Amino acid sequence: MQEYKVESFNLDHTKVVAPYIRVADRKEWQGVTVTKFDIRFTQPNKEFLDPAAIHSLEHLLAEELRHQVDNIIDLSPMGCRTGFYLTVFGKHDPEWAEHTLRKALEEALLSREIPAKNETQCGNAALHNLEGARKAIKEFIAHSRTKLLDPFGNGS
Image (cartoon, rainbow, N blue to C red):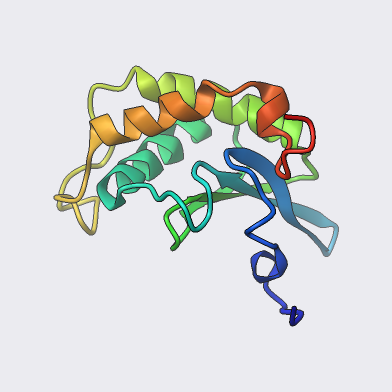
């Protein structure tokens, strides 16, 4: 396999077992540490989140994660529609991410509306699916911490 500069291009997507949370990258620059997590909801090349559901999940998580912690840089949906990248300030481990994400997802389940779902605040306000987002959340949090922290399925 050819080595690429983009970390996820070097991940063997046939070997991971979703859902999971893993550190995808960590950078230190001028005394600042940034950690990027790969948060995978569905099995690569097998299952994909509905575009409207992943969009709604992005809005819900973008808001709820910032209610949990103040070191969020970005939450980005993966183009392959299997999950998200969460980028944060600090050197954090997957256990921290699982705890923070689980709390945010549990709060998101209580939402009756999608934050910023309007043409003023969203570039595709018509593309949302709250029920699809809730379904993805329920499926993700139904898994144990042990499962979510085991990206290669070694312990399951």
